[in-house]
Length: 125
Image 1 (cartoon, rainbow, N blue to C red):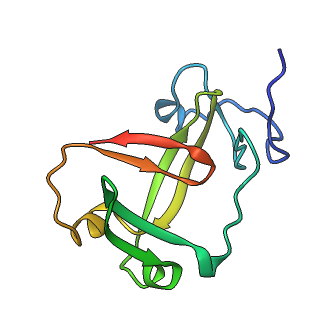
Image 2: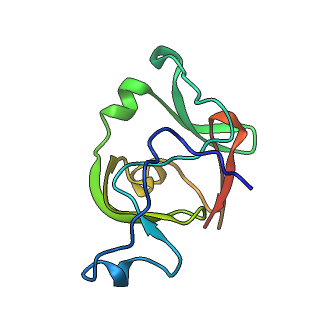
């Protein structure tokens, strides 16, 4: 069986001894970002981009790209472990924390359903 992998996936390596406790059994460490994709990457023009929080059909709050970029952001460093057996350690991300967004709306739901381009969804507490 072959797996579809991106051009960024060049080699597999076992973690060095000082990183071994950060990598689950059977995982390999990669320095690049071997993202697998189920389809084409959406390219929404920034003037059309929005991020919205809805409850049912009602929009509770919506941000344009410029408004979203003006929100306070944080930088976090995390290890990523993919189900396709690769791990990328010490990955740096910068973005707006979910709590910053949720603090701007009244809400009482115990879970949210997040929707994204490409039809992907996920449930979050």
